[in-house]
Image 1 (cartoon, rainbow, N blue to C red):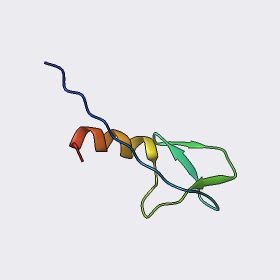
Image 2: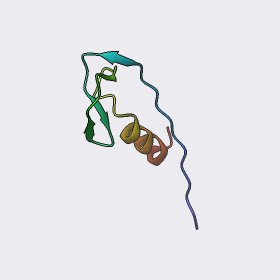
Image 3: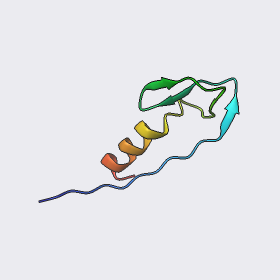
Image 4: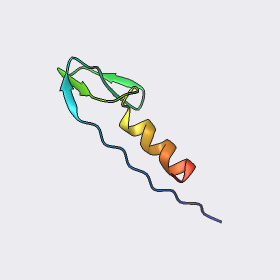
Amino acid sequence: MFRIGQGFDVHQLTEGRPLIIGGIMIPYEKGLLGHSDADVLLHTVADACLGQ
């Protein structure tokens, strides 16, 4: 049996924050704004796994 999850996460790009995608810091002058680490890839995977 296959289990398929779908998730999404959106954050605004802003100055003065690190850009972290999938736990990897990407060298860029802007980062993602969020109340947490704003890692859109990890948040999307968690969303898909948890069914939120």
